[in-house]
Length: 249
Image (cartoon, rainbow, N blue to C red):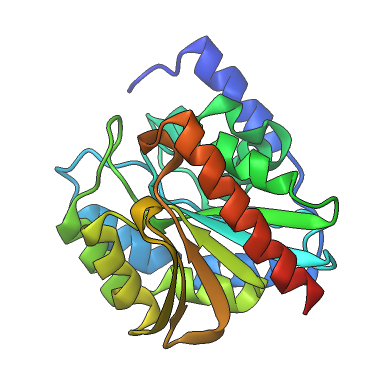
């Protein structure tokens, strides 16, 4: 039997003490995860020899359902997510609590992607943001993901599409526009790209509409970690203009 290190035990207790806001979206997300949990366990068992992160499961802050602009930011994959539970498999409720603590209360602890998410929150005072990932299970302690694991998960349940249906974002920002393998996975999860408007070709910024969510614009841009700051500021200005147009409609 492995002994849980004291600092990890303290962190796990903090996660378990974190309260998730009581609203209809969170109840629907919990119901979705409860129904999917056994299938997720089957995939974990199938790939038990792989070093995997835990699965990213959402919880919605109370300001989100009634925000003037509900938005979702899609990262690439969940490197090391849920590493606090290294010696045990957390429950879906504990992973929702981890999301509430790390994303909504700790603001992502300064990671490059979360800095981008936190910037997005400042665009307008009435914008509420959900942080999510195209690949729900990444590698345990490094970048990237195992395609075979991601494919097996997507075949059993398309969590991303279901989460979008429940949380009803009015805009999705996807900073993976210049990475082909993530573009391919977007089409696998959201259907064919039906329309794309190029906003600035050299910065890989565009707006897309996908088959399964035809009314939700996806703002595509490069990952914030992969651009020099001056270029990222240009990207942010373009995104800000698009958001202003969405809010004014």
